[in-house]
Length: 218
Image 1 (cartoon, rainbow, N blue to C red):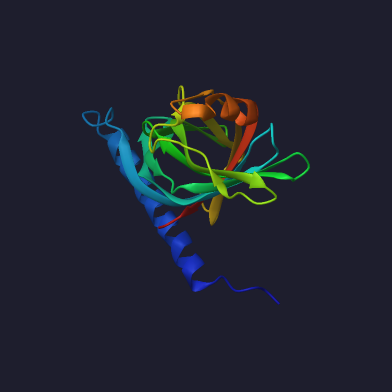
Image 2 (cartoon, rainbow, N blue to C red):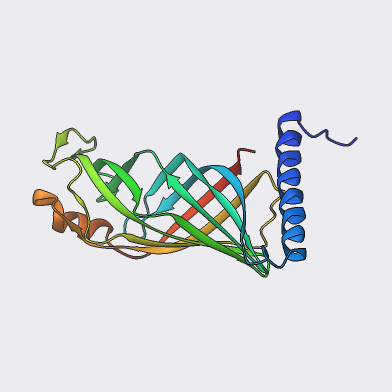
């Protein structure tokens, strides 16, 4: 009548409960010790990250991950935050134009320029990060992408990093996964040989969406 929790999920939830219980216990002991009360408590966390981003201009979606976010839950007095390092593998973008007649295929990399930081307030987790978007291996064609366009590896990228702010509403730290979402602007591109203007016209602009799902590795 009642579904059973799978052993792997149960172990993951138990690990999360133990970690949070330990954090609360340590935080309580620090509060009782004035000499250490100002020291923040850091509890290691690790998540597998997957998701999608949708480019407003083309309506095309790009699968993200699976990547990794490793960091810590930071308890500093009444403030709770998170920090970590995010890594994502390259993704393949497929774009259709002119009613699907003209096809474009490219490799896209989202490379963070620094750590992910976040705060937990009123039940919502808000995270912020910046990342460069790099594009190479561009192939185009009618009905099927077969003609490669020249690009210099590791050179073609946005003129400035993407500014990514994502929110997890009413976050449940005991849930198997934590969803988050946000919107962002894709800047113009540089060092893309003859493709700078084309990429800017195709994908640069505001109101692109991103949705990520963080699954705890604990």
